Image (tube, rainbow, N blue to C red; front, side, top):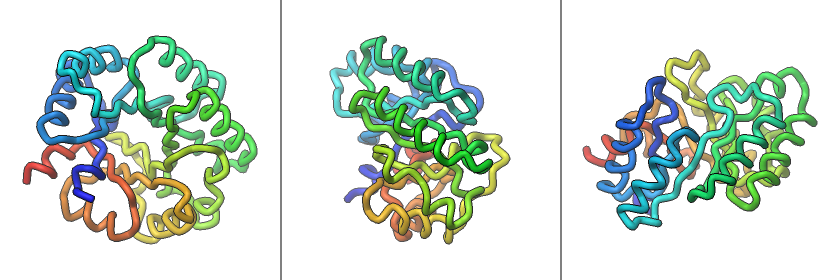
Length: 219
């Protein structure tokens, strides 16, 4: 598989994002042939309209939910997904941030129930769960979301500036092993170079979400 097929191009990690940044994301994705873009919900109308004008239905639009902290009531996350679906625009995936703090406090059952509620609300649209493997131990990583119906695990919110430690090689190897091939694993940290991307692929990561996808492909 070509590297471009395994990159997801995003701007959600950056603090200041407006119309110009979202337009540039779409234009650069079109230029490089990137098949997945990830953005905040407020950009849905703008991006959908751009792709309609380009007569392009190939690029998949992923919308971030409860980003970046995930510290929302489950009902609020469900309502956000339902509201987005009511707009009637093309949505191909949801990047949903889990309640990491709640999970670390021992509320594992509640975390599982939230995952199931998000999957149900999405009505068949893939849900990619954002966690923070950099703050989870081996046992906690192994317990994650395989039975909740999500399609993918995203390794970090990657928000900048975001005071969460980067996951090391061991954490990546653990999450790949724990998924047992049932889940797509998407790396999402401060990934800036082709070398970093290729190293993650060697560890078994399926895709990389990065703000630098355009620059990586152009080098």
